[in-house]
Image 1 (spheres, rainbow, N blue to C red):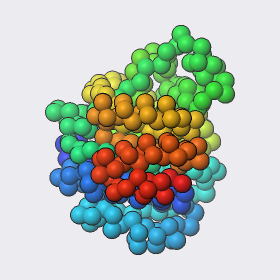
Image 2: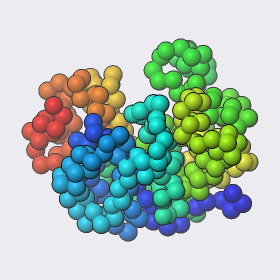
Image 3: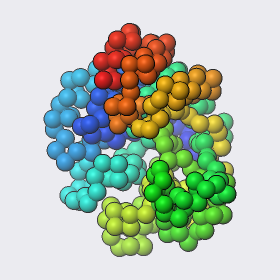
Length: 321
């Protein structure tokens, strides 16, 4: 990587989906048609992470493709096997999805791409400057880990609190001989939308496959203590490329409702913050649906009607229940 990558072209948008998330993908498609300008979008890539994707692809073609509106011609569809061949996965769901988010770089036609989950949908008109700085660096909302908090110490020591993010942060950085504690003031987020450079992803995979003399998929699944986004930060650092040489630190891009954050107070606070901060991406995790009640569904529905994504709160109720 002699020359630093820059997002000088259109952006590709990539979503890894599976049968359980197709409902959410409908909302994402509608939001793209409403809020993404064609001048910003190179391709819209959808990856079907299912062992047998035929039924889901048929459903997509009939019910979801039309929702992209004028952006539909930009769609490029891939099956898992298109990216990983005959490799047989040990782990499925979210873990195998991480591999797809890096492997897809081999098919990305522009210099940068934005990773989405099916649960992400856009909530206002998006401009190039939401993703890209004037000098071509991608924008990214770095996180700061507070090592003096008891919550962080429990996570760092492997305690079963929340997600095992720190364990995989350590694994990602130590694989490249880096001390993670040196970088805790500026760590990449683990949620989407997440911007990636095509060449960083390609070179990362090549580095690991050359070192290990095995497929990236095999290494990632057996190593098991890394994440795609932490690796995408650790690898350039290992090559001597500091965070801000690639990314302009920026504010968060969006908000997501996860299981465990579904009380009326939680959702009301998140929606109000979303409006105030001008976020352009929102999402409801599919596993959060069961925790929603009539009042919280009404709050989300009111928000979707407000931004024009759906026509009535009743439509939201049917969607979320």
